[in-house]
Length: 97
Image 1 (tube, rainbow, N blue to C red):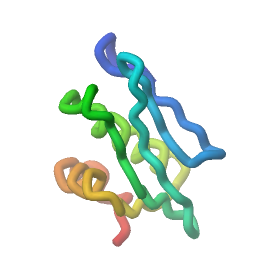
Image 2 (image 1 turned 30 degrees about the vertical axis):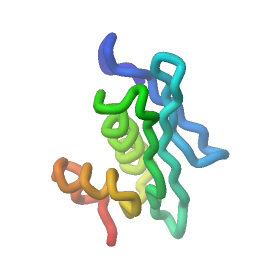
Image 3 (image 1 turned 90 degrees about the horizontal axis):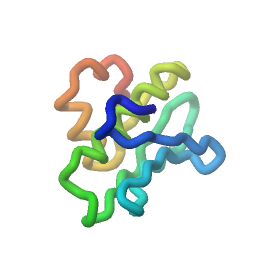
């Protein structure tokens, strides 16, 4: 999903339960698990080489948009995803726990 020329494409691998993107040869990822119709965001990882560019936020937004499209509730178990949903009240209706 490309938002503009500066926003990386985010790819969803449903079998691996992850979203990922590649920037300047480095891969950033968000891993989740599914439990009873809930997406549990377990991990968001961005290599230091591409950190500080909002890539983790792009991944969490993509995960939340995916959850909304699939009708899943969301448990932001990793600290970054929990902070993201606090800063973005437009996703409050998805959050559980």
